[in-house]
Amino acid sequence: MRLLTKRLPVKIKCLLITGIVTSIYIIVSYNLFEDVFTKKSKDMGKRNISYLKLPNVIVHLDFKGSPPKLGYLKTLLPKFQELGVTGLLMEYEDMFPYNGRLVNISAKNCYEKPKLKEFLKLAVQLGFDIIPLVQTFGHMEHVLKLAEFQHLREIPSYPDSICPSNSESQMIIKKMLEQIIEFHEKIFPVKYLHIGCDEVFNINKCQRCLKKNLPHTEIYLSQVQVVADLVKTISRNTTVLIWDDMFRGIPINTWERINHQVEPVYWDYGQSVRVSHVNMRKYYKKFKNIWIASSFKGADGRAATYPNIKRRLWNNFSWMNKIRDYKFGGENEVFNFEGIILTGWSRYNHMEPPCELLPISIPSLFLNLLLIKKFKEGLENVESFDLTDFYMKYLRDEFSGLLHCSHLIDIDYFDTNQCYFDGNELYQLFLSWDLINTNILNSLNEFDNDLFAVDFYSQTHNINTIKLRQNKEWVYQSINEVVYYKNKIITILNPYYDDYFIEEYSHLKFYKTKAILDDMLKALKNVSKIKTWTRRPYKYN
Ligand SMILES: *[C@@H]1O[C@H](CO)[C@@H](O)[C@H](O)[C@H]1NC(C)=O
Ligand SMILES: *[C@@H]1O[C@H](CO)[C@@H](O)[C@H](O)[C@H]1NC(C)=O
Ligand SMILES: *[C@@H]1O[C@H](CO)[C@@H](O)[C@H](O)[C@H]1NC(C)=O
Ligand SMILES: *[C@@H]1O[C@H](CO)[C@@H](O)[C@H](O)[C@H]1NC(C)=O
Ligand SMILES: CC(=O)N[C@H]1CO[C@H](CO)[C@@H](O)[C@@H]1O
Ligand SMILES: [Zn+2]
Picture 1: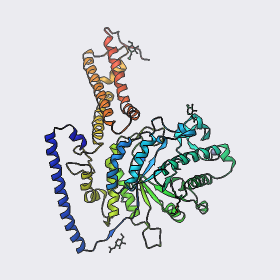
Picture 2: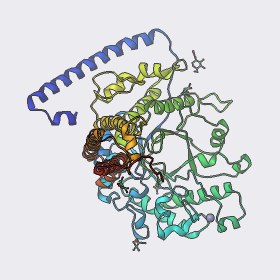
Picture 3: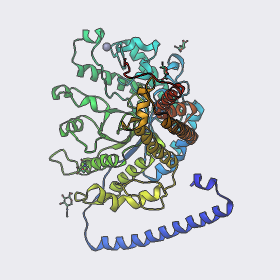
Picture 4: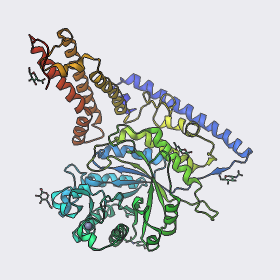
């Protein structure tokens, strides 16, 4: 709405506002009526309604290399509240302003403490739990990539995993935990802290570790113990969360000895969630609570521009159906999972390109939150629904309203052209750019196209000089289009991201096409210089 009204004269604004107020009135009264009707019909026939208990609904904010401006994140909080979000998982990575010995772990454009504090205060005031995430084993690229910490790597050539057998590693981890916890404790009691510990790709490989002569699993479990104890020493009442993937392969006999004060988060971002009942049962026996994690972005390709909204919905739908009546066997009551984390990955790891941006993924996030809300509010048996039916019956209307669309949004032909939400302009612009980009690249690659031959024949050989002028014009025009879209996207990204990230992202998305066109232009100009040609046959290198 903001974007729309900005450019319009006052009269039209008034009209528009009247229009909006009237439609809201109509929608509200319609819903009231509908409520009365449905209540009546509900009372008439006994329905089998199940309510999903899922006390924590957490949105993952991954600041890994595409940190949104805090001002933008603030604007999302009221919607989160409305959609039943109870907390935010803050994956700071290098965006936390560390100090002292750790100062270089922070990016040069990391969040400033006063602004971060202000954001957190607001979030806490609105009732959200803030869950800081600190990587303490794998995915420590932001620490281990630095010259000053490279000696702490498990394998010298890979900066992902830290060596747990080096006492300096433990000291650095302790300092990270202390700084994070102390900073947050000043604002609110840290109820939860997530210690990462997923995807420890390199474990038990260095001499120090190997000397202990222990299986990988023991090395892993003892580090988890060390970190969990560290957290408890710093903040006794904090509950420690951990991604579960490294637990999955742990043999049952080892499992018996585990007595960690942690709560695992069972993650699966697939279209059809595959829950290992065996693993789930192990967790059930050993841990006080089990959490699950789905994904609203960052699981559809390492350099994806948009999340696949249907796949993302499927993932969550699949989870909801899985846990709605989860039983371990024998018990009467359905098992209650403690919470769900909707992950929104920003990069597959520190060294990867950025994947989907948060503003572009807002529809996916809202839709999944709405889905969870529906399951919590209570549903009749949904076994008989396929996803499209479910969407039509329970989600479509509210979802279209959330995005301020002038029409009802179809899940199979997802089109937000007539919707008004922050991020939509960016989304639409990328869609247009994708079309144009595909056309340009196709034109350059089509073997039948005369442009294809320019490169090859530009050195010495025959080129149709009449075509040349047209080709040059086409290339100039295409370059203009690239520059136009690039500049436009730079402007539109401004409310969401800082200049450093905008520079990276706009470069990433446009450099390739631009470079190909620039080369083509050079070749065309070169060919234009040739005025006479030699006799056939030609020589090829
Ligand atoms: C209600 O649903 C549960 C599980 O989905 C099923 O076990 C039960 O038999 C149903 N009850 C009725 C009255 O349909
Ligand atoms: C941080 O990096 C700078 C530049 O590489 C270096 O001079 C400084 O000593 C480092 N600081 C710490 C605390 O290690
Ligand atoms: C931890 O929780 C207990 C019980 O709720 C409370 O009495 C105690 O003050 C808390 N300790 C800290 C350090 O917050
Ligand atoms: C331009 O043509 C010359 C030969 O005429 C060739 O050596 C050179 O590589 C060409 N440059 C480009 C960019 O095609
Ligand atoms: C594609 C796919 O596997 N979809 C699944 C989504 O979730 C529902 C409910 O769990 C399954 O029935 C579908 O097979
Ligand atoms: Zn080691």
